[in-house]
Image (tube, rainbow, N blue to C red):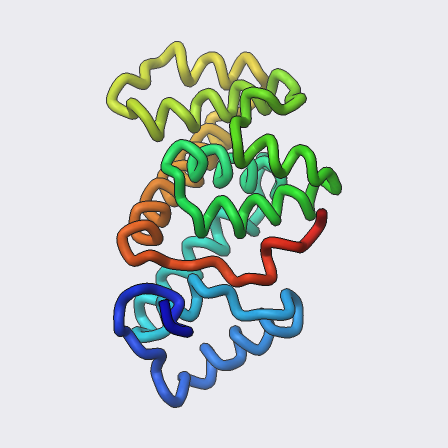
Length: 188
């Protein structure tokens, strides 16, 4: 592997559009790095903008799901799909948001061993079913979420976060996307 974020030869735009450069500068300031997933998409401004708009909406916008819960979905899905990039990056996010490095590791290895409440368990059970057998989801699966305290809007958000990470896991694995080294040592 070279210094490319993926195994594909898709060089970043040079120069970057002003808006993209500004976004990358914000990432550098806030995170101390530009995540490789953003660099991977930076060969095409439209694809990068579409990816970041959807990611930011699903993971950062107002929701009945906390940011930690959304990151937990990302990790549970990525664990099932064995996505090295997302397990590393979003496992770190779980450690950071929870303040619990053990929870981050449990989520990466097997979310079912983590000390989760009934709400989180219902949420991740649904995300797992979306990942493994989405065609078998029935009304009783949605009702189990309602019974755990989720609104129909929350169910929409759970489904979209799980669906997004199923897509990105496959892209990351297919392109051998590598996480930034910085993620490995953070929040431990």
